[in-house]
Amino acid sequence: MERMQSDPPSADDLRLAKSFSAGRFVLGLETAPAIAASLVDLDVYDLPPDSLDTYRTRVQKVTQDDVAAQARRLLGGDGILAREAGVAILRGVRAPAGLAHRAVEPVD
Image (tube, rainbow, N blue to C red; front, top):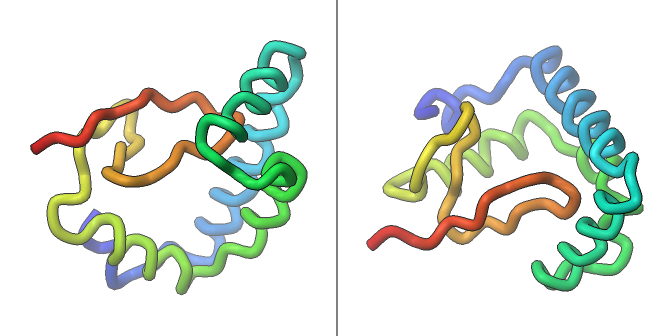
């Protein structure tokens, strides 16, 4: 995790991660209940109404520099609360609409 702050993923790793994220998002919206839950997420997390429509485009725009900058911002200090199945649960980060994330209370 510390390495991500100074050494962003390779171009190929980032391409694969973006492809996976965009594909998973689409597959996560295959059923009516999943779509309904995603629409509720828009309201719960106060996201823009077009968030579901623009998600894949926004993912594809992420650069290696963006990843390194976010890693420095989010992973520096004590920002990590927990890890579950390889996914860091971060303080103050909203769960993207349409993805299953558990709500995590801040740890003091």
